[in-house]
Length: 124
Image (cartoon, rainbow, N blue to C red; front, side, top):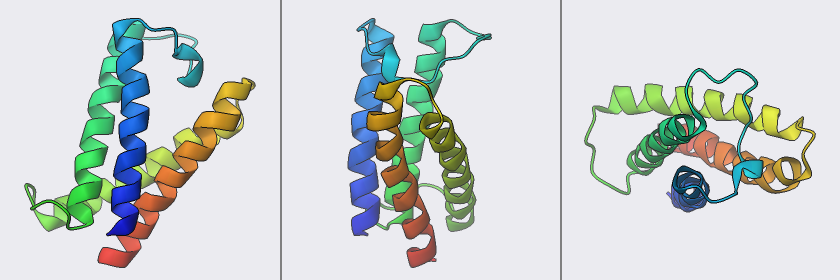
């Protein structure tokens, strides 16, 4: 339960950075760069913001902090998918050439990923 709260609060921090990118603030050095974006940068940030909000709600539901909106099996599958997805994104941040991504966002996402794994293995 504590891990899901910590992960949700850290996800709020990441979501605020993403939302500020949507508004046009110059915080793109903390976000992943795409060489060939299929959508514009603002649409990519909006999509990332929606995924982060869904991940936050899934983490809080898996930690039994908020009531279940979705069935338990679906929450388990979402938690496993999001933890694997966050693990891959964290590896991209760790191997980035930018210092902001490597020294700020990579440890932050590592903590969020660990919170997902601890929540998965402790609640089910």
